[in-house]
Image (cartoon, rainbow, N blue to C red; front, side):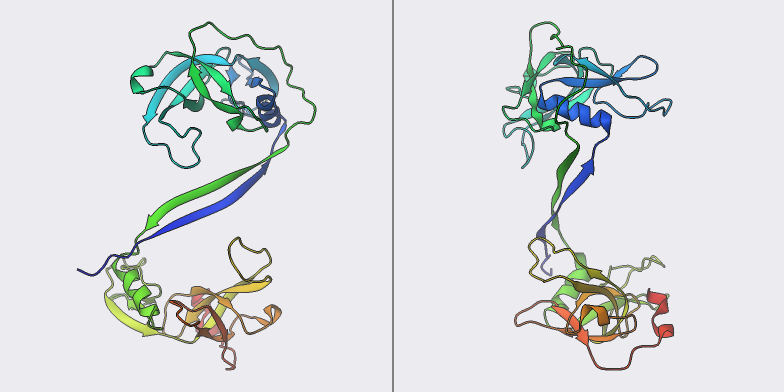
Length: 313
């Protein structure tokens, strides 16, 4: 059996969004230890609040304070918290209908074990010691034996309101490329670019996918392509990526390697960014010990005719 390749991968980026008046009031309220909902035209109070009525689609903005206590409507136990989750000890995910609200808020419950959690149990907010205007200002919920908490009577107007948030989106996973891409990666380490041909339409896919996405047939015939190719389209990158040691601006392009039926992407170097163009003929540049081309540079050949690559735009 050939070795199955696998590697840990992380996709991460900061998601920045501005807030409308309702969401701004809600998050600013959390910073001030106040929980706000919004009242719909039929008199229901929604927590967390939304800016448009989910039934009528009318804009709603009548803010209502609710209590920091409530009732668990449903739950699920999490025995192994992951990185970045609200608690680093086992906890329950819970939907809590706060006193005065008609909908439930998703958060976590700090409990000693699943036997201590039940639908219908009473809970209250445990506030974070430092609050910045985010849902994490509620550190968690905790069991509560008392009655409904008392709202402060806040009208939803604050000084220095929160107007925007930055949420870090991150996905950690282990990727295994499968038979076709494993062969492709191993050939790249030998400075060869090898795709696979569809037995029906005869397109050569690079990188290979193990099956033709058009015909649905398995591919197994290996075909070496390139190493030279043609720039089919490109973009100029002006924002420096985290952990990428490349000075901006630079050009990232789709490149149709000679003999391939699909363009792959690669960085273009060895030419000023404003001289890169569609039809430019390029070749790979390898670094010592590199397992894939570092970038592609012009070959000095005449530009390719548009008719030869228009089907791969």
